[in-house]
Amino acid sequence: MSALQGPALLFCPADRDERYAKALAAADSVILDLEDAVAPADKPAARVRLAAADLDPQRTIVRVNPADTLDHALDLAALAGTVYRTVMLAKAESAADLDALHAAGHRVLALCETARGVVHAEEIAAHPATIGLMWGAEDLVASMGGRSSRFTAGAHAGRYRDVARLARSRVLLAAKAFRKAAIDSVHLDIADVDGLRAEVLDAAASGFDATACIHPSQVAVIREGYAATPAERDWAERVLAEAEGQPGVFRFEGRMVDEPVLRQARAILGR
Image (tube, rainbow, N blue to C red):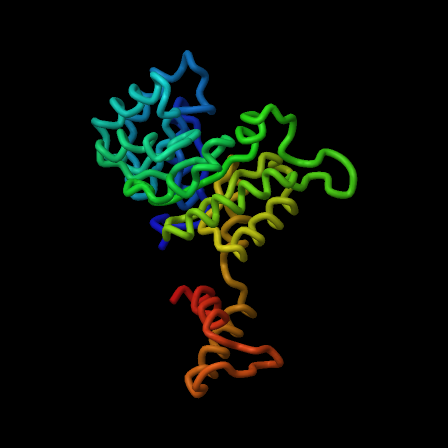
């Protein structure tokens, strides 16, 4: 299902070309960001630097500006002379937003990070150019006039608010409904390793294919979280072996096992 090269996607500002190679070496894929990571005055220079880059096109993603902006057209013009054909569309809000990218031959990771984008996640996922969906918490809350995507105090401090959790689930369901990759959002608190680990483990268990990040130190946590543990692999091997001699539903180590459970076991082993 997934067209990604691995679970850890690292953002890198497109105007910082001295970081390109290091970012790609650190992660499974690099996202060269022409949108929020680059100040408006620096975007022209960022496009020039990106166009001159020599990176693996299979592991390089370019985040372009929203479809309704002048910068979007300029981003596409800059990409036309490169080998980079996988783009992340910022603030995707409808299937029509992907049409120009599709016409240019790009594969699209659509970033549903506004209220309108989340509501239209299903039609975006169905677009022929789409290879995956990602969601974004901060832009989502900002698009609704909110103040924070996470609780800032109390017993739930650091956890996403319900509206963010709903958006996360909806984007995941839309991606999987159309057999596209699902990418979880970044964890902005770089020092909060435990919080990142908990989110990654939940993402992997829920069906996400990858998690985006903003710092190289987060890559190892993401890779570890998506990798099956030795105990999980051992269980999967044993339950699948047991299933070969069973005609249908059976009991294994005190648990009822049917086809959905066996599919989970195959997913653990990558089968």
